[in-house]
Image 1 (cartoon, rainbow, N blue to C red):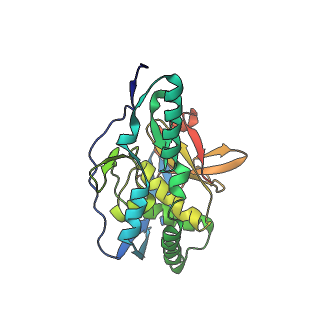
Image 2 (cartoon, helix red, strand yellow; image 1 turned 90 degrees about the vertical axis):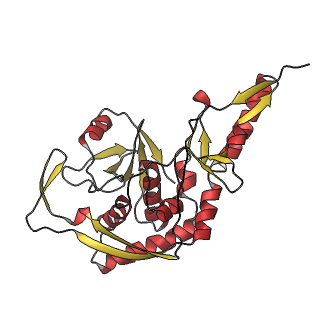
Length: 284
């Protein structure tokens, strides 16, 4: 009789408890840090011109709980998929490939090394386009009513919108209606992040990218580090802005976890960028 082996993916699990907005419309109020007049920078501190104020933006956005639920339910891998028996190495490889294919159809990409999962950033940012396009158009209309015209200014309005959401790290899994653990690699879908009103670097960056790309405002890529992620937008860098050169194009960095203007990131993170300790994820 052939030997039967048990294969288990080793993933760290913790509890996720998120609450979605119950109302159909939510009013978002935020200030655009890019609208203040900075005299100079002293390290990570901006010296702002006396009397300079930031533009306040107010936007009423419709959030459909059913669309949010469908988005959340489409993302993640049931933990039960990650444990299976196999007869030999050939059978193991076949079942690993099957898992890889199923996970990929739910926004999770299986890495070859270490039997680990990561987020399929392209899959996530390209989901729920219709709903996110409606949201993005409302934010763009709000910005335009307040005098925003250029691609850079509008990009800043979207970045500050996402930055205004509190930083909070999602857990590595959630529980579905059947009580099953769904592994999510510590991320949320953009509609889910919008509805919850918080997120971490991954979730907030994916929301930002989904919004601006769904209306064709600006191209986005992700700068992925070991424990952090930046968004980067294809704009011409202004003086003293932080950017990278990738495929003969300039990409200006945006820190979305907190209120940082376009092209400014914390000094310790910039040091890592300067050393090349990152990889670029292209979004299509």
